[in-house]
Amino acid sequence: MLHLKHLFLVFMAMPILAVEKQTMSPEMMAALTRGQDKTSNTPSSAISQVIIVNPQSIADDWKTAFSMLSSQAPGKTVFRLADGSELINVTSIEPLQGGYLTLVTINSNQGKLLQVIKTADIVSVKTQ
Image 1 (tube, rainbow, N blue to C red):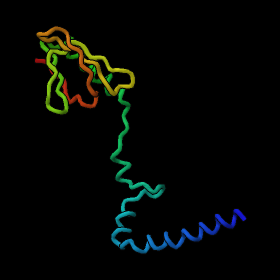
Image 2 (image 1 turned 90 degrees about the vertical axis):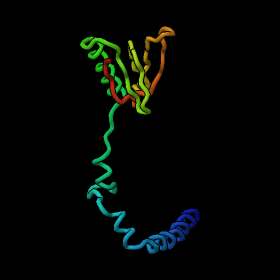
Image 3 (image 1 turned 60 degrees about the horizontal axis):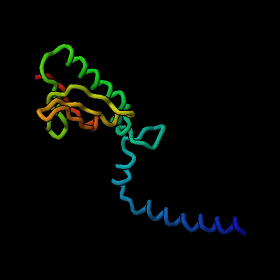
């Protein structure tokens, strides 16, 4: 008896799905199927535009860039952030485990300041 109840629910849902498909205009159906990959239901344009990068790799790259600039170019090291602000006179950076955050040490008039920033917010690094 339990099987008949499930079968009844399946048959009841089928007309609803058919009505939903009929209400889509041909333009909407074409838009949904345009650019679809032949092996999956994912649009091929979405596949080609997604790049997954390990955040730890990015954080390590920034640390390497900082180290190279600090050792080869005299002056204050400056990090520019995505919001346009700058961290001036950075003396060290240390990516935290996972790479999403970076601990930045800054020399200032008040002494040594520590600041944690999102690694993804770093736009550039230079010396002045």
